[in-house]
Image 1: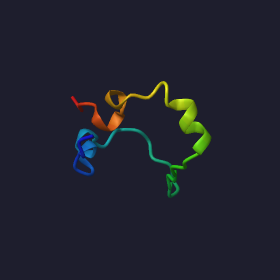
Image 2: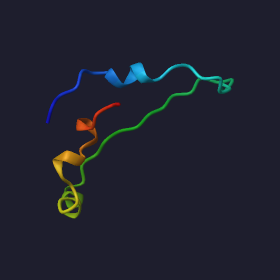
Image 3: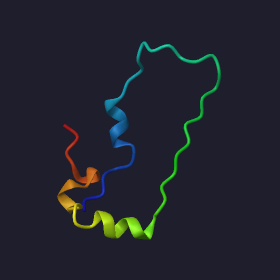
Image 4: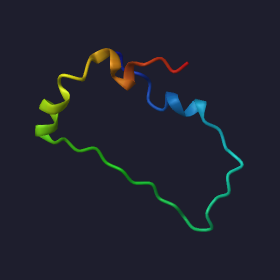
Length: 57
């Protein structure tokens, strides 16, 4: 797997005309590992389908 420079994807985004909420918004998410899910996903996962390796254009 080729490591991409951090925040390379940010260059593709720009401000929009979307209305902003009148309050501060905090987007929080996290990644967890559920060992049982690895076995479930293993037959469907292939390295070439890894989103981190797909071309950005």
